[in-house]
Image 1 (spheres, one colour):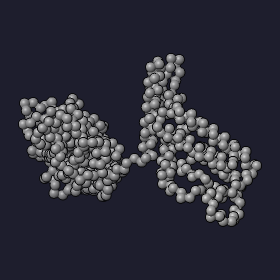
Image 2: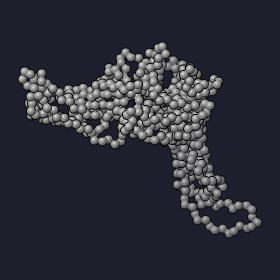
Image 3: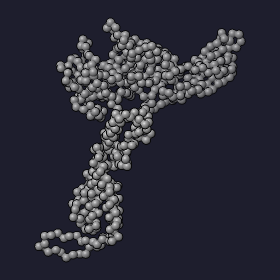
Image 4: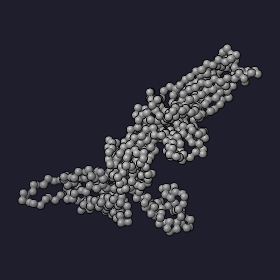
Length: 575
């Protein structure tokens, strides 16, 4: 889950958690609303905690609420009581994630949104309008009260936490063939008509997508088609106390092509609907918005058959009109002008997001946690160092380092200084899990292998004979592994052991392994490897003494243990 939405009441008693704010209407079902409320019952006294989900139609601003009048009508509302606990939903992966995020004393809740509720739609306010926009919205609210819904009980704002959510519809995966319409119009003083045909490729288009319209005109009359116009109208049905219908024009474009008598015209014209061209139109239906985020023209409302009379709220539809302006010739041509109008339905929606899959939360891996923790520690170091330099008179600039992205400082001599690059970065950055995700993953894999490796039941064999010391199962870094591996690679092949007579039964001392004489050419190589390992061991010891990071200290300890194991092996080879 990429984001958790959280809202805390003014008194800090209740905190509302939601995993998302867009809930999809799939026509036959709607995503259920899963959330969590964290409680601090210190000041609850005899009050209870409730959660409500309400779908409401707002038809006036809050500042118009005078003389007890309310400009908000609840279309649908549902309450659940979570404290004292009276609601135990079946836990979903979303619940489990939010419960981990919220911590102790958290209570889950679930709401089922009916399919006959409208989608979130807001009406565009005028340039001088203030306050919340009119329209249909959904709101999750948790509050403290003595009773669930008592009109006489006043609920303080400081005892309430609320989050606005949206009910949205996405375009279906299957898009059908586009609409097609034909019209034949006769005129006075003309014995033959004008034929107009218009069609589209598909029955649904996305917001911002170009809409191609194929137009055919066959003018068999004695009149001239002077020009034609394409308009798109948005029709808003507001079904509340009574059915009201409003139509707003959202697109208009004229084309100057003329079609002479007995002439034809055929072309495909492309139009695009944009909210930016309709910003000043008050009352235009828009998709529901959260706070002041950008939105778009309202999507077409999709309904299952038979629900038209059940749905309350705002229903949105679009219609394309092709209008031909036809005029006769002569002095009376203008007076005998007539229009030929053809209509096509248009569905406008959002495509379903590619990542809009069923919710499956997976906790971060151990390697990812290592990276997160190390980056946090590194950022804390940078902040501390920058604070120290600011106290010394350095100035913080508005630019960032091109290499690491850290904010740059400037001293009194106008010299640019990057704390991260010049003080924290070193030659072990490739092994730092804060800077290298592969390093974090490798570190975790090494620990898993070390934990899974079985304890050897026998002592390991070295040069054909048993060793007197058990092997330590610690992963070796590449610095030391190469030295030890190089020494082993130069060893001569082990000689076949000579069968020895059985030891007397009275002897209690174990037989010592046979000692193989070392080649004189091997001694310098082993000494050189030993010096290299000692050098790396001294470096790691010095770094460990000055390290303040837990992760870096663990890496250095692992390196020291590996170096010690390598030295032990090299000394055994020298004997």
